[in-house]
Image 1 (cartoon, rainbow, N blue to C red):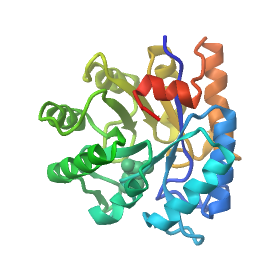
Image 2: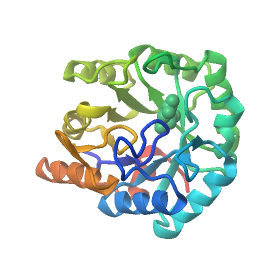
Image 3: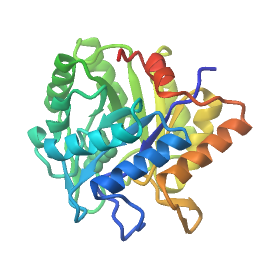
Image 4: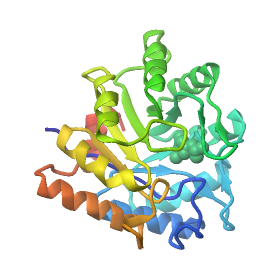
Length: 273
Ligand code: KMH
Ligand code: ZN
């Protein structure tokens, strides 16, 4: 089985210090959390950024400073900025970090309810536009799918030539509005993508570790981090993103799956540095 790629989603746009005081906001905090995750075994940092007061932003200058600070501490890590940003942002606002030409970025493949009155909007034309921009800039998209229909959308746009192979999916499961995170749901998602595609699973909240464990067994890859879950065990807040990555590494070791370095992750995902 190929080695396990661990992605750390260290910050997110919605989670706050009220949920867990260790959620990073400042450049220094973001760099420190990225380093803790990287040292524990993460090869990809899924990156959102904040202003110092915690407000989420897609500002290119803020991304630039955060990426530089992360690279200083973890020179070879793969940085994957979000193009999802936060609910309500415009497309152009969301796209800003791609102009820094990161190796990867997220490509959200559909619209969904996002709790309360929030709607995370990704129309078909938005997806095509984002995909075209990433193609132009040579950025590998991670296909964020929150439901089975979004896999179908991604496959349709791949067939039309907008999304290029090799395809890499991230099944985000357990968002209030998307697919839930039961074992049968993951099996359904995995069986719905082409055999030669790679996949990662992101389990939200209590789904995080059970789905990570399934991915380790099934040959998929894993994302953990404060964006998705702030607890290390039931009712106990995680001290850092590093602690969540360490837990995945421990489970992988017990199950005999080796951890990929960033360069090994590049090879698995078909990223040319
Ligand atoms: N913050 C969510 C609205 C992504 O990073 O591409 C969108 C999100 C997805 O987190
Ligand atoms: Zn995100």
